[in-house]
Amino acid sequence: MRRLFFLFTLWFAAIALSGCGYNTLQAQDEAIKASWSEVINQYQRRADLVPNLVNTVKGYAAHERQVLTEVTNARARVGQVRATAELVNDEAAFRQFQAAQAELSTALGRLLLVAENYPQLKADAAFRDLQAQLEGTENRITVARNRYIKAVQEYNTTVRQFPSNLTAMVIGMKPKANFTVENEQAIAAPPKVEFGGGEPAAPPGY
Image (cartoon, rainbow, N blue to C red):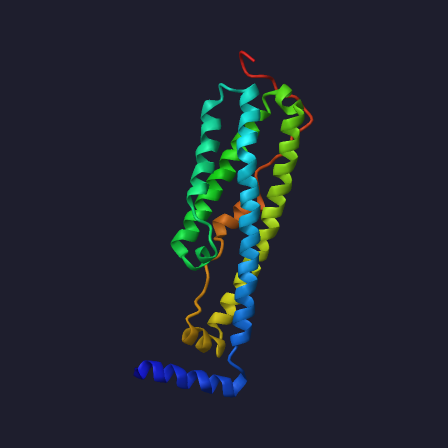
């Protein structure tokens, strides 16, 4: 009880000095929700492309079972993580989400690398359409994540700064999870979906 009284005393003192920051915290929290929603939408767009992409590649390279299985399993693990708005308040769940998305990015990169060995696949209109959609989606993911990162940085700074940190303590607003440095490196290098002009040799038996 004394602790609560002490916090309220500090809070009202902070208001008298320079404002409590309540409205700023609320506005920044809403900005995070909006930016996180866009991150989820773009990741879902990518996940929705995976089945068609896998089936198209399978039509030309059915024996590439390991790579095809890796992509399918990675997508399944992404679907197991419930990417709700509350995820940003759970550090462990947020890290699990990151790991699942990073695994899918890696698997997609390997799949597209395998496709380099199949000229007929690269020339397939459906594959090229999926390739273009994936490229556009990866770009939108990068933009959405960067907006989220900026929104969280601004919010977390407000939560930690005096006197708004006192308001945050009283109303129970805490720092939110953000993408890690390792994940930032992945953001800077999304799966490559543009193919070079040279035609690599087809694998044995093609």
